[in-house]
Length: 179
Image 1 (cartoon, one colour):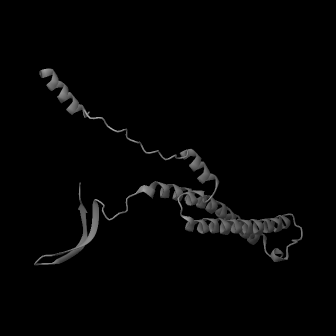
Image 2: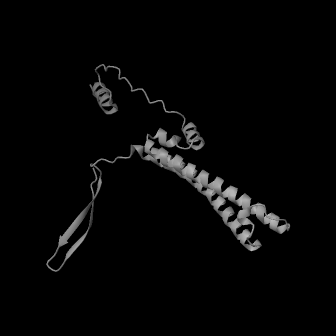
Image 3: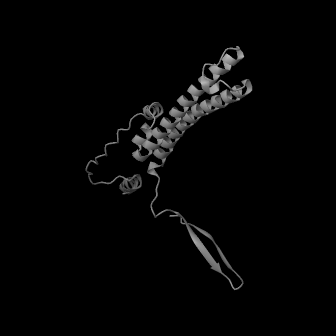
């Protein structure tokens, strides 16, 4: 009798039942691609992360930014080369071939050249910044995809008005419900 009682207790505590169970079908796991491939794709193709996250409205912003910064780079590079050529001609005491810079003194040519160089370099730095920003945006957006934004959150923030016989105060009320 003690052996039977021991076996029944053992079966109860281990969670096994005496009746036959139907085999449970396990859901097929989603075939996720390699995260390193995603990062490589996002890093190689600007806007690929936004396409992956289905945020298509960000694509014109990204490509418009690259187009504007590319145009500014080409513009400032051409102007820098023109002023640099005029400055070299002034230093070599040759006649300046560009009529736009023919009557400018040497110091002014140097200042204009440096101004165009700084603007050209800033265009390059801005392009790198935009490139990094779109990668960070796609990464953060992918991580926040599964974030719970429903009304059934455990922390609620709401406006609060408290009245006492002496004063009325306004503020924020934080309610944390632990379930």
